[in-house]
Length: 281
Image 1 (cartoon, rainbow, N blue to C red):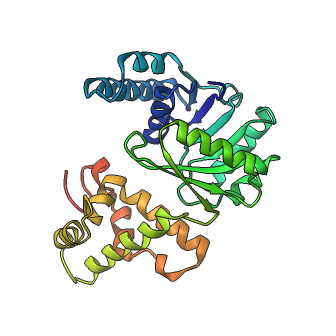
Image 2 (cartoon, rainbow, N blue to C red):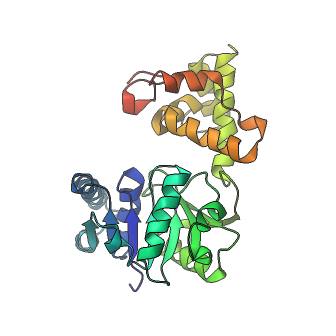
């Protein structure tokens, strides 16, 4: 394929995006701050592709080709030469702006920058570059290889050509893109933030136990897991950061995070990754 993909950040999201891109034939070069992190990401991708072959979802030849067209580097300048660069760094606006400024100075004028931000308005990121028309939101969901949705966010300056390129890429990677206007939190997180937050208020007020609230959501709303189970899976620190960001950006009181959620994060009870959150693991 003519389109080459640069990925900044090799964590769960970055490696997941690299996996679905390469298995669909897109050459990928992925960068992170250390080769150790990149090697771990390649191991996760290899394991994911091997599982796909074992379960019959991926042809062995497609797996081999995917691993062949996956490259890694610790040099951001190498990634900057790609047709489209997707950034997946921590959800911090100043860090993302600094990264985009670096990419902007190192990339050809034709390179598109796609941010996998979950909450930050694209317009606020785009103006850090000299090519705001080529900056767009491309929000994947965790895990990327299993979740079909990609929120494609059109910033104030995003051109139709840029939008079309990201739509083509999303579909080429086997995902379902949904285009939306720029807004803090976009669609899914605007919906899920007050939902999860309200669950913590219900617990804080003693309306029901966390177990019963999860049971109500599973059986009453037919969700695969309850809100407390979901927060433990994602990480309470991530959830608090997303809710707080939307609250700060919109000023809407319905996104005001509960004191209980704040206390849990302050206590280091972050969920599965710390072996203890709302539940113990």
